[in-house]
Each structure stands twice: as structure tokens, then as C-alpha cells.
Amino acid sequence: MEVQTEVIVTRRKGKNIIKFWHNYRQSLYGLIGFVILLLFIVVAVFAPIISPYDPHAMKGEVLLSPSISHPMGTDHLGRDVFSRIVYGTRVSLSVGFIAAGLSAIIGIFIGSFSGYYGGIVDEIVDKIVDTFLMIPAFFLILIIVAIFGNSIFYIMLVIGLTTWPQNARLMRAQALSLRERTFIMVARATGESSIRILFTHIIPNGVYPVLANTALQMGGAILTEAALSFLGLGDPNLVSWGKMIYQARPYMTFAWWTVVFPGIFIVLAVVSFSFIGDGLQYAFNPKLSVKQKEVSA
Amino acid sequence: MSGFIRFIIRRTISIVPMVLLIVLINFFIIHLAPGNPAQIISGLEQPSREVIKALEHRYGLDKPLVVQLGIYFKNALKGDLGYSYIYSEPVIDLIKERIGATLLLTLTSAILAFVSGTFLAAWSSRYKKGILDSILSILSYVLYAMPSFWLALILILIFSSNLRWFPTAGMFNVRLSLHGFARFGDILYHLFLPVLTLTLIQIPVYFRVTRSSIFQVSRDEYILTMTAAGLERKKIFNKYVLKNAILPSVTIFGLTLGYAITGAALVEIVFAWPGMGRLMLDAVFKRDYNLLLGIYFVLAVCICIAILLTDIFYAILDPRIRYK
Image 1 (cartoon, each protein chain N blue to C red):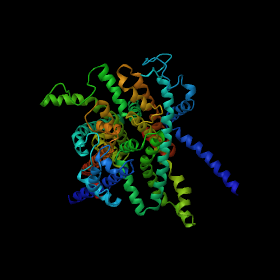
Image 2: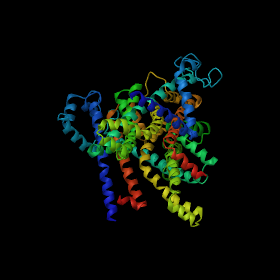
Image 3: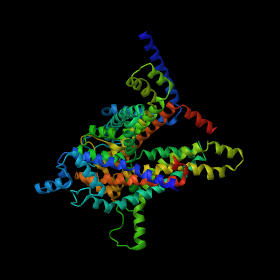
Image 4: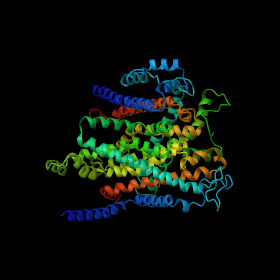
């Protein structure tokens, strides 16, 4: 019996993935974003193989313009810009994944609890979420990082801890509507515990908008890290795209490549996450594509 | 009209808990930060015993935490945000001197972005699924992904360093002491690139919201009825679709302002604009916690007020909202 249900579940999961992919493909943006992200992941994983030079080595000539030996030139200390960008991919991607992942987890828990149980706690959570959504998180992140320290783990943690309210709002709305659905009422009537209902029914069925939003927040986290680094608050031990722009700024007028290339990569990474968010919206909400076709026809 | 006044009062009351929450966050940061709270408030590296004593008494730091919180609230609402350690001046005075320049930048760009974003959305929605629409849509993704400080640097590279059309820094030419209209023109000249940067990064927000709401409104039944009744399509679009589709953009104006101020702070640093961004950078580098927290508080209050004003404006535009 046990085994049988497991087989059914996995079979259904397999089917869901195929269906998911089928819907995701509806969005051209989603596909492009997925491909760009895959390329970035490959670059991040194989950074030591891909980069032609050591990103910290100050051997080359200073401020060389792009050439065959240095495709994106060298910076004011003679370091190869391309190699530094390749290594910077690691920082940006991990900040994106970890910070936004943390934000999603916190948001899902707080949002589903608050929406499912309701009452006074829900009202307080709603007010806190409102406030956080209005006041830009960036300044709070900046203050905390300036005061408590700027290692990369700290930066990720703080971004995650200040950006969850968006996810909580989405998850709360889902929990509020799912709460009234028949299958939840049945579960409650058969005596399933609230915690079990939350984890087996509410969260798995309502998590989709949070996932689409998380893709966007990954891009947001990359931008936040870049801005912190630009203010000189990046991790002092790592190469990041924002820090490259920060360090190159004084030499910008006679060495444009030191500023232009890192920025292009920031834009590419953030756009790819936005595109993926677009694709996820189609995948979770197939009606969207039907509607749009209807109108364009 | 009484319904309208009641609406305004209700909205005003609803921002109070938000301001309180911000004060609460600041209070906790001061107490969790490394170092003695009295030392942070004094703005001195090594305040003497007397100074500490006096401050502890003034801010009630020798009393239990709950009482301290109450005193902190009272002071913050009175505008007493303590002293800045780098400038040895009250934080509130420093902010007062610079907030005008920041608001000038933020509001000018926000209004320009609102107008141009809405206009572009209306324009492109006529060519739905055409080349123009696709180009604008991709452009909106790219601009949305662009760090404000990087865009500012690129614009300086193009328009200041290479073409030499615009100045790279400052709010006015310090070498000329201009007055009256000439001074106004000079400020506008310096304002151009920072405002262009900030407008460009905000346009995508308005563009997308208006675009999707035009899409939604044009599917509404009353619009279909008008089309069926044979009204001219152009007339329906301009008079009914657009008018209703702009409403969501108005609501997000206040919310986008928070995003705009963040961008403004970074862009100010690039252009050496004499606003709060520069102040913030100094505070970060010299670890002036009090100044940082003060800036955060003032910006948060500004945003709350802006959101309140947009809500009221929205209620004037759309009377249905007042009775919800």
C-alpha cells in the first residue's frame, strides 16, 4: 500500500514537471532567461578553467584597452577585467540564490501562518508587511551592513531578512483563499492537525506566486549587493561586479572598459532573472497565455 | 464631503503605526550596535564621563528599556535625532540643509517618469504585438535591471567626457556667482543628467503597470458595449480606456517614490549632488550611526507623507475609493 501510493505520487510529479515545462515554454522571455542563467551557472562553476588569468594577479600592464590577450582590458592595478568578471559571477549568483531563497522561506512561513490562523497576529503581521513594503529596504540593509559588518554571508543574511514581506503578502493571500476551499475543510473535519494542513495542503498548493516572485527577488538581491559594493561596503575579500565599478570609477574617463563591462554583466544577470519570473508566471498560470492570444487574434 | 474628510483622517491615522515601527527599528539598532548607546548619541569617539552622564540623563538611558523606548519615541517625533559625530552638529540640522536638493531630484524625475512611462504605454498598446511594442518591452526589462549608479556613470562617459555637453558634478557652477534667472538656468543645466538617469530607471515601473491596466480595462464590458454601439475606437481609447487605466499608476506613485529615493541617493553620489546621498556616504565611511539612522527616519517619514498624499489625490480622482 505504502509503496503503491509512493509510485503514484512520483508518477504524478513527473507528469507535473512535463506540464510545467510545457507551460513555461509559452514564454519566449522565460526560455531566453533560462538559457542565460544556465550559461552563468556554468561560468560560475568552472570559473578557474574559463578565466585566462588569476583575478587577483597584478602582473599585466595597467589600464590596457581590450585586445586579444585581454578581451576586456586590464584595470588600474593591471588585473585582467574578464577574469575578474568571471569570478564575480560566483558572488552575484550566490547572493541571488541564498538571499532570495532565505526571503522566500521566511515569507512562506510567516505568510501562510498569518493567513491561515488569522486574528490579531495576522493584523500585526499585515501592518509590519505594509510598512516594510513602503519604506525602501536598501537603507535599512545599508545601515545594518555598515554597523555590523560586511562579509558576504552577512550581506546575504540581511538582504534575506529585510525582503521577505513581499513573499509573506503573496503567501498570505493564498492561504486566505485556500482556507475556505472544500478540500481544506474536509481535512479539518477528518481531524488533521493545523500544522499538517499547513505543510501538506496550504503551502504546496499556494506557493507558486512566491516562486515567481523569488526569481525577481534574485535579480533584486544582485542589484542590492552591487549597490552596497559601489558604496564601498562589499565583502573586502571577494571580487564582485559592483566592487569592480567602485574601484574603476576614478579611472573611468580614460579606461571606459573597466566600468562598462562589469555593468553589462549585472544587467544581463538581472534581466535573466526577470525573464525567468515571466516564464514562471506562464507556467503557474497557463490561462495568461490563452488570454493574451485571444486578444492579439 | 464629510465622507472625504473622514477618509483623509482614517488614512492619516493609518500611517502612525508605520512611523512608530521605524522608530522601533532604529531604537533596536542603536541598542544592538557595538558600543554604548550614549556614546553613539553623543557623536564623540570618547565622550567624557560627564557627557555620558548628561546624555544618559537626558535620554533616560539609566532607566529601564521600556521607559527608554518611550523617551526615544518622544524625542524622535520632536525631531531630536541626536548629534552627528563627523559634523558635530544636530543630525536634524544636517538633514534639513540637504533634503531640498534630494527632493528636487527625486520628485522631478518621478513626475517625468510617470508622464513618459504612461505615454509610452498608451502609445505602444496601439501596436500590440508589433515590433515597437516588443522593443519597448525589452527595453523596459533592461532599464529595470540597470543599477542607477552605473547608468549615471555611462551617461557621464557619453555626455560629459566625450561630448562635453553637460557638467559632470555639482548643482551649480561655483566659479560664477549667478543670480535670478541665470542661476535657475544653471541649476537646470546641472540637473539634466541626474534627472535623466533617475527618470530612465523609473520609467519601466509606470510603463508596465499602465500597459497591463490598459490591457485589462479594454476588456471591460462597458468598453465592449461602446465598441458594439459603434463609437469611434480612438475616442473610446482616449476618453474611457486611458482615463481608467492611469489610475493604478497613480497609486504606485507613492510606492515608487521609495525606490526613487534609493536611486537618487546613489545617483547623487555619482554626480556629487549636494543632497542626502552624499551625507549618507560620509556617514557610512566614518561609521556615523546616528546620522545614518536619522537619514533613514527622515526618508521613511517623507515616504509615508508622499503615500498619504497620493492616496488623497487618488480619492479625488476616483470617488469610489472613499467609501471602501
